[in-house]
Amino acid sequence: MTIPSGAKASGPIPPEFAGGLPDLDAWIAEAGGTPLYVYDFAVIAARIARLRAALPGVDVHYAVKANPFAPLLKAIAPLVDGMDVASAGELAKVTAVMTPQSVSFAGPGKRDFELEAAIQAGATINLESEGEADRALVLAGRAGKRPRLAVRVNPDFELRGSGMRMGGRASPFGIDAARVPALVKRLIASGADWRGFHIFPGSQSLDSAAISESQAATILLAARLAEGVDSPPPLVNLGGGFGIPYFAGDVAVDVEGIGRSLAFQLDRRPPILAATRFAVELGRWLVGEAGIYLARVVDRKVSGGETFLVVDGGLNHHLAATGNFGTVVRRNYPVAVAGRMGAAPEEIASVVGPLCTPLDRLADRVALPRAEVGDVIAVFASGAYGATASPSGFLGHPAARELLTNATLGDDARKALIA
Image (cartoon, rainbow, N blue to C red; front, side, top):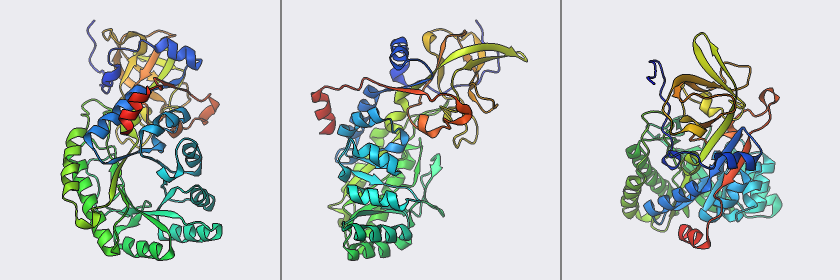
């Protein structure tokens, strides 16, 4: 059937799922129904393996804010060198599955009880201001602890092409680079265990050259700051920035090319960084394309000549897919009728949720096979910033279910990934 004009493009379905979802019914039965997030850990493990092969000698950290689902954290912990948290709640989740010395705590506005929890656990605090540093030192002194403190730097450059720019401007995140050496000297003089620098210029970039450029600038900035302190940092966290393809026309980052460029820069790094370890901190790139959001059609209606598929979940579960999570121009995530992924498109339909707001639109005028009540709609690239980044309490609908699949790896596979 010829699709009428007016259909809007949707993003690329990740290759791991392009052949269909043969386990769809089993996932829904195991979880107890829809709406449901499914995270395929085999995809995540393969991402970690690819990253380690591309960036040998560079530590891999997981940014927990991307997806803090407890079974996922337990599965991913043995495969990464560290995790980065942004609240006491995330800290508690992570220290249940990973040694606290491998955990770092970032984010502005840490309250005293959060600083105390990190100090007591032995996690590294990425300081966001001089005031936070003062409070951490006082709290550690009261507790009789030697705090592990790193400095988050607000760099004097940004990551070009990033969805969220975190540097090169006034920011609530980190300490302006010019003020960092004085603070680090004070931390060292206080007897704190200085752990190095956290430098995060931006996120969700698909520009591989820009990521490499940013990493090179980060290394030079870290060296300049270290020379200002006259002390080498134990660790430089280069941040992340690796984006994933959400929308039509998006092209995946060249991880291997980024790795080659980073290796070149590290081989030529300034002498003061000779003994420094380097890490990349990724969330979205590790888990984003491993996740699928599944919602069942509860009504099919036509209004003003347009077809609407009303499903049992929406922006209350998946704010990002509705275009209400920082997107300037609304575009469609990859979407499909889950049980008919091999079928040709037959109609243009919009997928909308059950909420009383026109913002609750998971897909806008996309070409799909005909879907009926009871069919399941799949929204791909949903493994990051999904359930916990959405207003789940809005209008009192039930929370989405979550399921981790393919979580069991053999011992040999785990050893290979960890090595």
